[in-house]
Amino acid sequence: MNKWLPWVIAGVFGAWVLGTLRMPRDKDRAVTEFGRLPIVSNGRFQPIDSLARNSLLQIREKQTVRLADEKRSLTATEWLMELMMNQPKADTRKVFRIDHPDVKSMLRLPGKDRATGEDGKHYSWNQIKPSLEEIEKQAKRIAQVEPAHRNQFEQAVMKLQNSLFTYMRLRNTIHPEDSQNFEADLQRYLAGVESGVKAFRAKEAGRDHDETVLKEFGDFANRFSIMVRMDTPLLVPAPHPERSRDEWSRIGEALLDVIRGQPLPFAVPAYAKMATAYRQGRVADFNKAVSEYRAALAPKFAPELKKANREYFFNHLQAFYKALLIYIVAFILACASWFNMSDVLRRSAAWLVVVAFVVHTAGLLFRMFLEGRPPVTNLYSSAIFIGWGAVVLGMVLERFYRDGIGTVVASSVGFLTLIIAHHLALSGDTMQMMQAVLDTNFWLATHVVVVTLGYASTFVAGFLAIIYLIRGVFTKTLSPATSRALTRMVYGIICFATLFSFVGTVLGGIWADQSWGRFWGWDPKENGALIIVLWNALILHARWGGMVKERGLMNLAIVGNIVTCWSWFGVNMLNIGLHSYGFMGAAFWWLVAFVASQIVLIGLGLIPLRYWASFRALQGAGTKSGDEGLPDARPAPTSA
Image 1: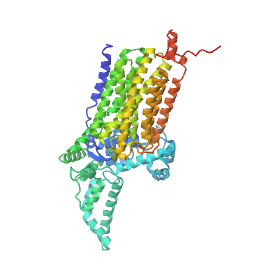
Image 2: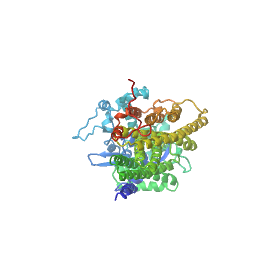
Image 3: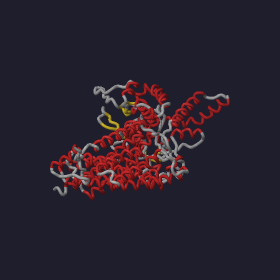
Image 4: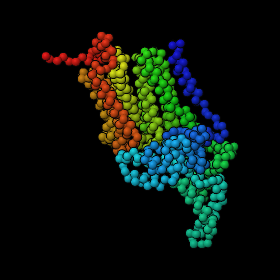
């Protein structure tokens, strides 16, 4: 049984992943079909489902809305359908997450109360609406403060304002937020356009005109203008399919173009039918309207439909979330194997890492296919790829040493980087269009990939060093053989990291020369990349010169974690330079916490060996430690 148990455990998790591939079936409304409709948002084609997920993540930090009173949850697409087509109902949903107590006090929001169903964290539009003027007043004041100098209250206010703006945009995407029957409103508007234009021109010329007709016409035009100013997503396809996504337009724009003599695109009445049927609870009519619109798109917009279908499946797959969960289980099993020395647990953990890696890789490749880009295009994708590279190195180490160390590193770094990616996704669309200077697949596939592999390698060396310290200080499992094995691992990976960091930095300089006309400009990001190269070279030279032994090597490798994290994230905190992605307050404090944790670990590494649990165990067994294995901790002789 012990022989087959690792295969059984891996098979169970593999079956779980495969079992989630099946697309859900709609019970009543055509939620899936609606979520797969193509639109343009953030400069790219995507399904409505992606817009819903990204928007809800920004507002609520989750992709579902829990309805405590109904004892069920709304998916992101269901929530967006309601927000776009039945605003009064959507305004009662508690989707806005507010954590800062001073913001709650300013808005006079209730605290946690089970009797009223308040959880103290989530609030509805109706609860926040009375305080919109105060939010706007505070936001205007805070806008004058540099992002890097804003306190937590000010950051929370600006985050809430951005969430409210996103919410208002979505409310006005299909029709004006105050429309109760958009299909009837549309018919009335189209019937009155000609007479409304005549009345407007007559008034401009000072002639008699029908004031009632002009007022109704002006009301429609003002409401549609608001939809345009809201910068809503583009739902109306281009007049000709061969035109680019830039030719797609907002529904408000299409309605105003009718005044200029343009024909009404077929998408507008289609969405009007959907909205009215949804608002009135006519499920069959809503489903029919969605189906008819998809059929109308198929002849000329088949590529857009296919892309939307693929991205919808990618969203449903949630590959990175599933990989994250499997990495956690693998980490627990691998750590447990050290304490009871069970090879079954070690092998089970190793095979789980393989399963998680396959899922991780599938998600990475699928994302590359959807974007048509190399694996790293922004901070979010860099976290995904760094974790992937670290898992590869961890599996290689486990294949050669088979002691659980490679599995622990692979699962822990894989888990942590995917957690980082999840929090980066809270800022919005992770596949949005790139800046023009970065829109070069060749350099994204060379410089960015190579330097990111350098990041991953340096992190792996640092995490191996952390394992060395934790096992040595707190457990009795760091034998001389394990100590020597870890030293060889760290040394070899630092060699690998030095090569990739150096090559990636040089390639980045060549790209900078082509893009900005200079090879090196002492930009913070460039300096950060150079520091990684120099630090890894320092470690190697210190080891070659005999200036450090095992413990010194491990402490220097942990400093490498700080250096790499600074280059990866820290330079963004400066909010200067050509590589800055903007100041992120939450990321800043997490960065500070990570650096502090590494300093604490380095402090542990400097504790005299006589206080290390593994060293005491070896001394108790009568084993002498020297330069190979655990360093000698005997006090130096003193003169008489």
